[in-house]
Length: 84
Image (cartoon, rainbow, N blue to C red; front, side, top):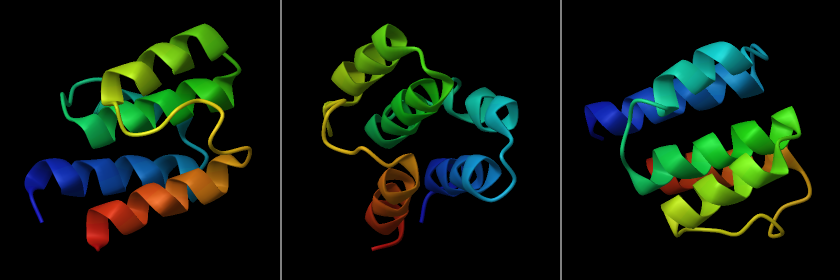
């Protein structure tokens, strides 16, 4: 697993386990990868910023805004993609 993937997992843990939106956002905003952009999209969905969230979903190219109604399940799906 790459260092960037490890950072993405850390961001997921910060939001999913610790409810640290700011900490998670600081991590993913500095990583230019589709997975980080997907996490970034989820963070803005959690925040309630639909326009910004849709932008990051488009940037990631991995999912669309409407796919998940539950951000916790979405973060679990991202974790599975990262860890296999």
